[in-house]
Image (cartoon, rainbow, N blue to C red; front, side, top):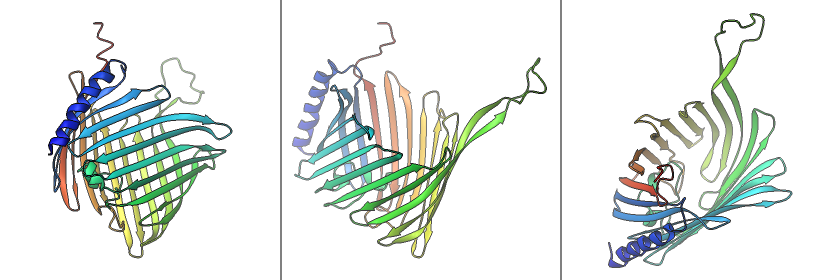
Length: 322
């Protein structure tokens, strides 16, 4: 931890205090991460600062300065478009830039992203290698991706897209979704000839497709179950000649009390050139005092890491009556 890094954290605290006076919805974050390898990383940030048409997130650690802006605009006849862009600068001089846009173009929903970097993702976040979403671990390069979704019917969606950069490949598939319901017992006085009432209990989504490109060729399949309580379980797999892997995740709200959230995931994708083949993690979020405490444990190919973050609103508790 350099003196320059600690000075950046101190300045971020001062900026957060100044922004707090004009950003009632903003939240302040204090966190510390430890990764092996990677070491200890204190971090402080401010999120959701309203700057009119855009919102700002900013942070400083003992390794880097970070900023992200997000917003939306209307582009007739394309419709509403949401945009986000981020930048991080390490004290060693490396940078990471990324941007993403999502919106509609007629009947097609588009999601496009890109990044350019001269610093490794782990220089910014020592736990980035073991995230659920695969992270490009190169120290220098670029990447891009695009996904298009076309609704064929109320329950069926066609999907096409691709990834570009270190491992270019295309994907093509379809998703089928169905709501799950249960029949309610009749109440006293109901018309016995009337159709029984039902209520929604959740939904199930099935996916089938294929990936083809550099060092990957195979059929993909997956399923997601979502309950009305918010519990969500998902599993996706790839199988082909020399290419195989699987990704699973589970989200359970309220497991450790009201307003808590628990997330678990496991991914094994040895076919990816630039990302960790094995990634696993567990995240628990619980309310604590005026804010929220999040603990994160991750590991996989090359090591493991832990993180604790406390987040609380700068504007105070507006419902307290004080």
